[in-house]
Amino acid sequence: MGKKTEIYVCSLCGAKMPRWHGKCPECAEWNTIQKQQRCSSSQPLLQRLSEVQVDGPVRILTGIAEFDVVCGGGLVPGSVVLLGGEPGIGKSTLALQIAGLVPTLYVTGEESPSQIRFRADRLGINTDRIHISIAMNPQDIIAFMEKEKPQLLIVDSVQTLYTPEYPASAGTPTQIRESAAALIDAAKKQSFCAILIGHITKDGFIAGPKILEHMVDTVLYFEGDFSRDFRILRSFKNRFGSINEIGLFRMGSKGLEEMRNKNDLFLNSSPSFAPGSAITATIEGSRVIVFEVQSLVTPTNYSNPRRMADGFDYNRVMLITAVLEKHASFALGNFDIFINVAGGFVVRDTSADLAVAMAIASSLKNVSLPSHAAFLGEISLSGEIRPVAQCARRIMELGRAGFSTVCVAERDYDEAKRAQYNGEIIPLDRIEKACELFNK
Image 1 (cartoon, rainbow, N blue to C red):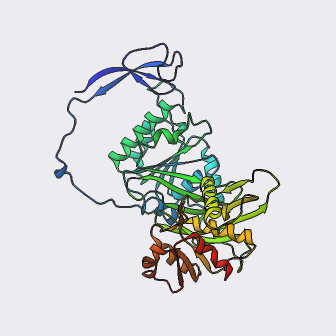
Image 2 (cartoon, rainbow, N blue to C red; image 1 turned 60 degrees about the vertical axis):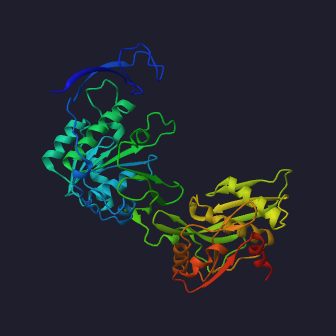
């Protein structure tokens, strides 16, 4: 038998302590400490690691290929996925579309069942496989899962869960953590998949996702600009697959649509480029994304020229500008420089440095770069063009996108030649040589 122990928990911040306090030592709030009883097991399970049975995870395919790729090839029975993002970004829409393809218990705490049915009919979702409930007590949800035995549990949202054992109100860190822990434990024991939806708030204090990231198996975040119709589903943690995977969706009248040709989002559809445009490729997880970098260089009216970047690191723009001034002899001190990544894509890869430098040079000289050319390379402070990771994969994707010339770092040339690419590969060792392409 386990032994009962008394602990005291803050209903606001969830801090635990051995005795009662009038004021919480963690969050400094008064009269928030409540007594609770826990039963601790006196005989924990102990076994040799060599005796543990090893079975590869059997994936459950949801039928939405972009979601399955981000999860590592599908959902693993017994795993718990945390789906976070800003309110209105499309989390509930994606969850409902998945529920229409997999036998699901859909627990809704923010909308009524009639509202869910109305949305499902509007999106053309098959509702025969979906059981819906408004139960917010984790024990009731677990009982429903044991009775109906669906493959998937969706909780929308985790901030609405409430465990009566804890006196805190729904949405507080204590309720979110303890309620989610009960569902996670049940998922492991009953081998069902669970998707917990959580909103990210501006203050971050009652935001569910940050509290639960260390508890769940997979953390997915929806990103996107509300002024555009595309959404990016990004993986930040995955115990059953690679991290930094992305899925591309477009928000339409029928819900989220998968983007089969991802390059259509970030490339200029016109056959020729204006001055200041350059093409490069970045790697997001297992995917190569080809995108366009745009630059505008104009004479400044201020004593301190402006440097602005949208979708690219501002500090790297300053670094690249300084390198062009030092090693390429470009007089940029009297010019404002604006950098934009087309389509609203956000680039964190330094392999786009060369494309940014070429776009700046193109706009400064008002000379268009060849529309069939792309640029891959990191720029060092000494003006050297450094190699990039997985250069061959990037070149092959550029070839499939229709680019017949790729400029790479000289140290990447041998790897580039081994790629399945029929176009021209130009090795460059210095930023000066790259800028000399304009003089030909």
